[in-house]
Length: 452
Ligand code: BES
Ligand code: ZN
Image (cartoon, rainbow, N blue to C red; front, side, top):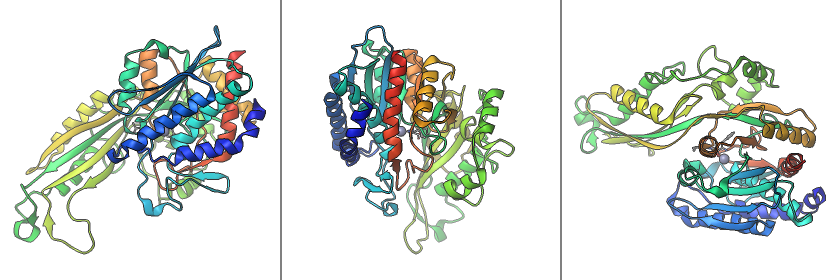
């Protein structure tokens, strides 16, 4: 089977390229046909791999793709999750090769979705294919559930999983959608932040106004957005929303110690990975705690007014701001959104109205590193990568993790093969090809260990 992986490297790479060439951007309506093509691509891959019951699960939202192999009675059942949707590729001019024309440079493949999450979803498919094509069976039972709206909050899969369909019964979920802590260092992610994504629409005057003629009397919605933002988070990065921190649980002393021992150079991270003159955030709180165990509030974009070349003297009538908050255990997305809404209303300057809309949300999650499913994964990773596996959390969100726990009662094993410099959600996203091939081996080894 390992020799099947060796012998089919070229085919795997060609398949991955075809997958990456589909611009399945979930947030942009004009890509609906590409979303469907990507779903059908995954379904076809699952059929070719030898899975049974392959189908697109339709519903409001983007299709889910399902397929299973359940020929190992008495052995564990794994729910294999991934997502075929991707983030928008903009700003396009910063890509060295077009985002949907995968290009290999050195040992990396560059394309939107290369690492997040098409390349990693493909790892799961190819690992299963290797067993079914060579031995005709697997050491464990597997059920694939691949979604197409992870990057926009995963509404469809949430409703589907909440219905607890019997065919999703499993002992654990396996998710390859996270990062390795450092190149060559096998990593299991045991915690994710949650998220609440909101949009503010601020309205001032009924229409745009001459800033000389009306300045001094007319309210300015862009200024209002700035004032609201400054009221929500202070200059030290502390969120000023009343009650927001009430449920925040500090990491355990054991976790804190483990994080402090991770091989890490904060100055190199600042200079090479972040590329900013200085790192920011709550004073006195260690970096990993700020990234993994403290909530945040970020503005993603502000729309309104004049941003063209030259100068236009206008007081805009309205402005829109996109804002998200990352949440940590035990914060609750609905409660955090209500606290946010109330704080925005309190911070609203005179002369404008503000509409606050919730776009999506997901609960934070932690998984117990002592679970036998996690331990077996660490063993598989350690064997394949030849180094001791580290446990980390991540600041990102994968909404399904909390939902698998809440509705199916199963832990998620997050064995990710991305690298910190993979440029997720940014221009020049890439996936390190050696991680692609080793990822397949590691997942295969994981199945074998669990099947013993
Ligand atoms: N794969 C990422 C999450 C991630 C990135 C986890 C790096 C660990 C390390 C995922 O696809 C993602 O970006 N999720 C969104 C979810 C949101 C839009 C609901 C996120 O975190 O912004
Ligand atoms: Zn992802």
